[in-house]
Image (tube, rainbow, N blue to C red; front, side, top):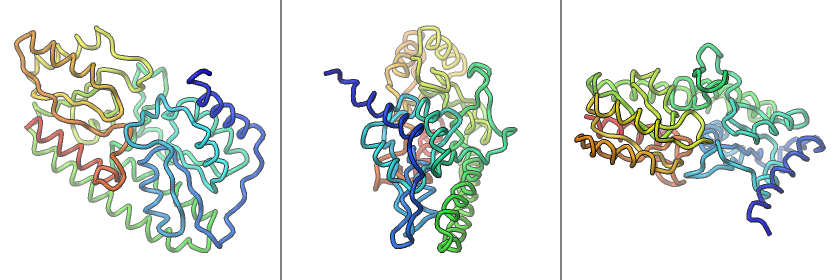
Length: 308
């Protein structure tokens, strides 16, 4: 039997659920709201807003690349049993995102990016007219996703609307503080050292918000691997600008970044691997990096410490 069959079955089942599935039952009020999210970043914010009034489950765990993710059969069951499904949108989830759009016709399915003003979205020319989906790297922009989550929970469970509203207000305040902390921390680096080289172009919003020159070996999506020309392009920049460190990512293979390191050494410039950044997935549950704020702080501290 093909090893790819379970994934194929999962996608087919999701497609059937989208096309044929009935209306999702509203929560009865005697149990917490069941929320399913695609990424951990969404799950963390949703859980903060919901508090004890909802159970929140993320489909994509640590080290998972959402660009390449395919739903499993267990994912289909979780989605079918959910009162609310939250996903990023902006094509982050690939074909799964297309299916979730169809599912929204008969059950509460919300793209959290829907509230972000389009004028604040990046539209890189190499991304075929689509928007960059990595909005969580601009903390102020990620805070814009609180409102659609709050609205969806309140619609489903109006009895706990006041609690959701209070939690959302506290979360906004915390993200405002986090945004200011990131700006202060990055400002500790001299401008000429604010060059962030990573495995793929996930940090564009981070660069625009906090004044960092971001260079990715791969493009916004990881569907295509970095080639020799990509490595040579990055090596030229690292050598010319005497960049001190380059960074691997938890959800992307590190071989292309290591190839840059080797090529730089051959040209007489020693560049270190500055550490691992969490890009498309957070860290393990129960660790500081397993929360959105902890992930952001880890990334920023890793970048500043390596480039200073």
